[in-house]
Amino acid sequence: MDILNFEKPIAELESKIEELRTFGSEKNVDLGSEISRLEKKLQQMKNDVYGQLTDWQRVQIARHPARPYTLDYINMLMTDFMELHGDRLFADDFALIAGFAKLNGHKVIVMGHQKGRDTKENIMRNFGCAHPEGYRKALRVMQLAEKFRIPVVIFIDTPGAYPGLGAEERGQAQAIATNLRDMAGIKTPIIATVIGEGGSGGALGIGVADRVYMLQNAYYSVISPEGCASILWRNSIKAPDAAKALKLTAENLLDFGIIDGIIPEPLGGAHRDPEAVAKELRKAILKELTVLSALSAEQIVEQRYQKFRKMGDFEERLAQAKV
Image 1 (tube, rainbow, N blue to C red):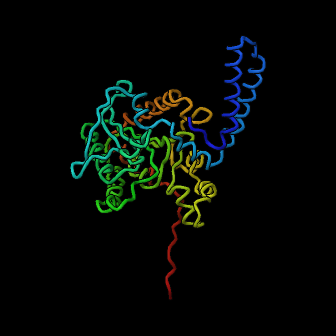
Image 2 (cartoon, rainbow, N blue to C red; image 1 turned 180 degrees about the horizontal axis):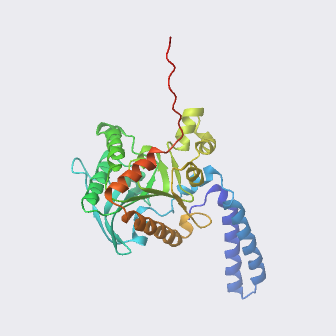
Image 3 (cartoon, rainbow, N blue to C red; image 1 turned 30 degrees about the vertical axis):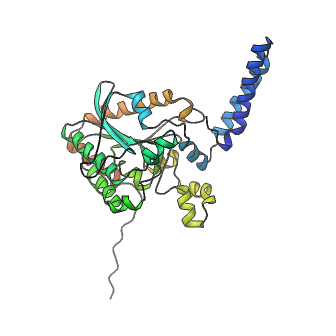
C-alpha cells in the first residue's frame, strides 16, 4: 500500500510489530508483552496523526491510489449493475460511468467518475477527468431516470473536467453548464456523494443534487490547491497554503451549508476499511431515499431549487438616485 509522507512513522512502527510477530513465531519466543506495548503506542500515534490532519493532508488522503472508486462502491453496495454507454452524439466516456442497479432491492440509476488502478486503466479512464460526452451521457441517463421515476445515486471523484483542446472544441463548458441547468429540474430524487476529489466544474457537472454528502477525507473545491497556488503565488509548492485558504474540507463545507452530511471514515482513510465506509454510505443513501421518495416531483424540484438558491451570503441595497 502506498504510504503518504506524514504516515511514514506509522508505517515504520507497523513494520516493526510485524517483524516481532514473525520472529516470535519462527523462534518460538514469547514477545506478547512487547508487541502489546508497541500496539498501544501505534494506536496512540494514529490518533495523534489522523486526529489533527491539515487540509492538505486530507487532500492527499482523498487522492490515495488505494482509495475505493465508484465501481468499488457499486460492487459493495449494489447488485444487478448494468452499464449504459454513449452520449448519442460523439462517443462513450470511460471517465464517467452510468447505469441501472439495485440498492437493497430499490431500483436506482447510479453514476460517477471512475479512475484507474494502473497506468493502462488510468489512460483509458483519463484519470477520472470527463470529456463533454461524459457529461452528456450523464444527463441523458438522468433524463431516463426522470422518465421512469427512478432515483439517481451519484459518486463524485475527479480532479476536474478534462481541459484538453479536443474537449474544448466539443463544448466542455457548454456540456457542464447544460447539466447544471437541467439537473435543477430533473423530477426524481438525486443523491450525490463526494467520495474522493471534488474538483471544480468537473465535480459540479453531476453535483446538483437534493442531498450532497462527503466522505470525511474527501475535498470539494472550485479549483485544485495546486492550481490555486499557481494563480495566487505563481508557485504550486504553496498548495498546502492554498488548501487551507480554500476551505475545501467536509467540515468546512458542512458549516457553510454546501453539503448535507459527512460520511465517517476509519483512521487513515476509506482504503483502510472500505466495507465499513460502504456500510455508512448505504445507511445515509437509504435514509435520504426514504425521505425524498415520499415527495412529489414538484416538491423535489422546488426543494432542490431552494437548496442551491440560499447558498452564500448577499445583501440587497437600493441605489441612491443622483440629483
